[in-house]
Image (cartoon, rainbow, N blue to C red; front, side):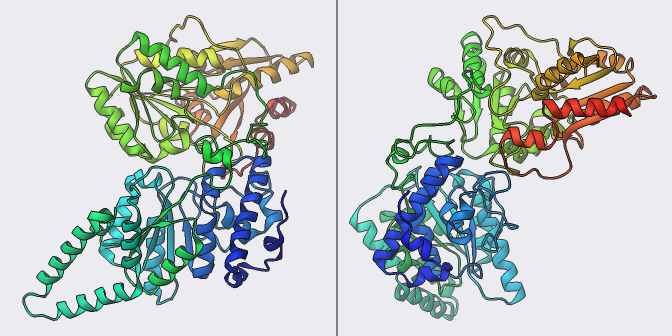
Length: 627
């Protein structure tokens, strides 16, 4: 770990304003060293944060947080900001149980003005703050930093449209680090951008506009003509025409690794009282060769060796559910040409890279557009195709209305593959897939499944392909119990579970990822003389009809799921039993996620903390029988 001479001597963020140019460059290097060192131990979003070190320093040089509101989008870019506002020692607890979050959190620091985790929210939130400022008669700047990937989401454009209409004092910084929204057209573009950002030029435009407004009859026409002429000129050399159409003053592209240029631009536009968008070009993974070479891998990375970039995360030796999805869908697609796969900017995360390589014309990455992904799939399904929409559980929440109206109401055969269902670990409450059983099971026409192991997952995928209606399959991050993959896949009978273990004393009903921890607990208790039965429910909806009869035979029942208890599977079971007057004297205990947002930590730590691991299930069974 390199010496942090400058970073270690900072007494507060105000000290950044007093540093020389050479000291700023040295501080940028120290920040990168600290980010690389810490993330190599904790995992996290490395490449995006390395790309905005100079931008972060320029923000502290030109603005006055926490008075000025700095709003980061997603938070993947906020690690340098976290170091400067929390300190090195606190930063080294990144994403650890009891440590700081990997994302901005309002309850963590006064410098964090908005909690984020999903994308494309920064402009909307920042605009709300700007309007609140003006309504209250207060005086501060509001700056939203949004990445080019987040600009693929419709919400960002809705916010731009509203901000332009309101003409509020708002600064949006577009961090263009990957998608090449604009091409670099050389010195002329740079020259023109600098001139368009000059304070005197902007003031001249404003004075001229005020003067033209005073001309009777022709004032507005002259203003419109002048605006069109300027936009035409800009569009010849810069990519600003889109943002000018939203009534933003566009400045850029600007080198995002040149602190002096960034600071000059920020100082020039600070006096504006209208919306301005600054287009900043950065390099993802800047300063760390492995991340520069493979920014996708280092976007969200586990533990690694800093010297080489090689992963040091332990391997389970078997395929994750995401990998099994890609392999199995590819197998099924060879036999059924109707099958298409859709993801929302997560082909690697959802395991669809093999499908993309094998069937490029049947693979669609729609960007960070979950709502569009779902309705797009509905259109495909309406014309006879079988779309599989593969999205993280927490992100599919954004498309709830489309699931209801565009898929389920019309009974269309769209399959939702919900990766990262349950507790995801170190990314914390914004990423836990804690709610999908609750927000899906009450929708008419929907079939909801959860596999207990890898072969069952494959069978569910085939079952979904053959079902003429909406299906959701939810599965956890990482792997299952390691049962391998099937050579021949057979479909399941919809609405039928499986009795995995017979027993007389107590019945455990388990869902998905809790099936095999429950089986382990049951076998352990049998050695203690407690005869436990275990039922793998498989289908959350429709509930297996046989389950009602099975449950009614036991006086003691434990239900285990990795979803919030409110509205989850256990709620469905209790509702069904009550509707059939089968509750009687049955004593039921529920294991699941309580009614609160769960912090970050490893999956193992969180499951143990919530009592839903092997030992937690045993404890609940013992306590139930003791009572």
